[in-house]
Length: 214
Image (cartoon, rainbow, N blue to C red; front, side, top):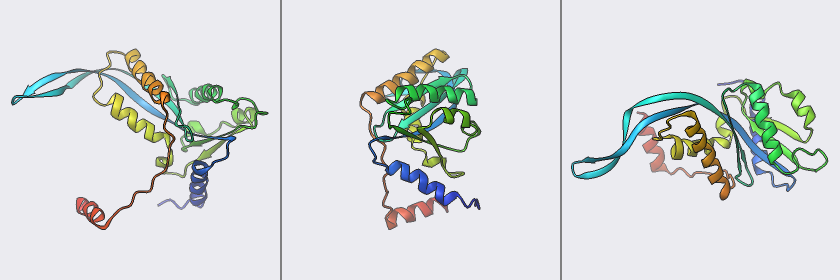
């Protein structure tokens, strides 16, 4: 267990951003999905014992990988994305520049708009002091160490994996990029605000969880 004395304050800081209701504050959860593979598989319908199923071959061809930088605007549910070949700090800054351009008023220090960005502690997110100095209305808020699950954009990544990547077949990198960008456009047609939800765990459910670990 980490002994970092800043863990509690960092957790409170991140949660405070999620709960912020000030109209001039835009909270964006940012992270990257790295090494997304363009896998080409054989897909089709098969008949098993008289029943029709959708089948995926266990064999595939690999067509390189890409990295997706993405941001989830907490209050609106709007998703920002930029696909890059690498995941260096310069790529992260390029994504931030693009996202700031797309958020109304974010690039104007006199607009009164504050953009608060939630990030994990990955190295490329640090050392951006020069960029932040050029954008005084933007601040970074880091999740505690080993707590990147607090980053809301992970929910978007989970849906992207489930609805686009899992079982998909991509004959080349361009097809993978088109599928990812298409899904981002689809989400932004009717964006859903991100909300923290408390799950009530009843006694029977807790016992089942314990049995599963035994």
